[in-house]
Length: 96
Image (cartoon, rainbow, N blue to C red; front, side, top):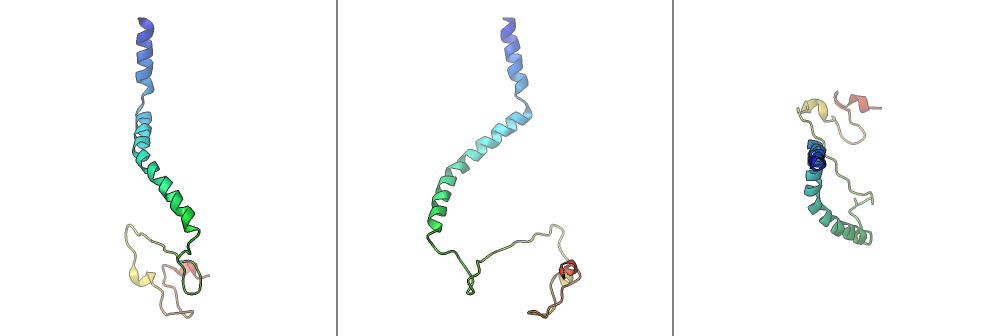
């Protein structure tokens, strides 16, 4: 009887908050794993189709920049157009 109590106490001690949260995360991720199979099938088919590109043939790309506290707009945007532009004070370290 004493060994059964020790075994139950060990099991309870082994269930830590970290183990619980790790298991919970795995349970939440399981439905997403089902959709991965369809994505890999799409990727296999995408190699046969032409990817989006610019008129010059360069691949299309997109970037998102997030400023949690905002930016000073007049210092952010460059002045001028084409090769004759001047960087604002915020982007001055990138001039070289």
